[in-house]
Length: 65
Image (cartoon, rainbow, N blue to C red; front, side):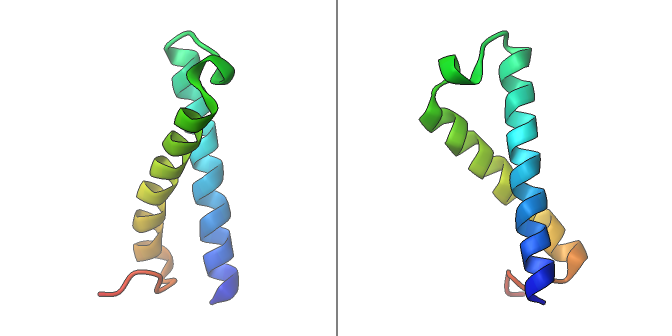
């Protein structure tokens, strides 16, 4: 169970970083110009959104029913 949860966390955070970099490139700026705090908060929000979805399909049990 711990391994599934760690995999979920790694996938979610990697997804958040990749999509956030894509967003900053789409709006024609750099992550440095976007701001460290905004970048971090965007990564975390995207990671949580994907993590909730993955929790359902991976059956990690992080969220209660």
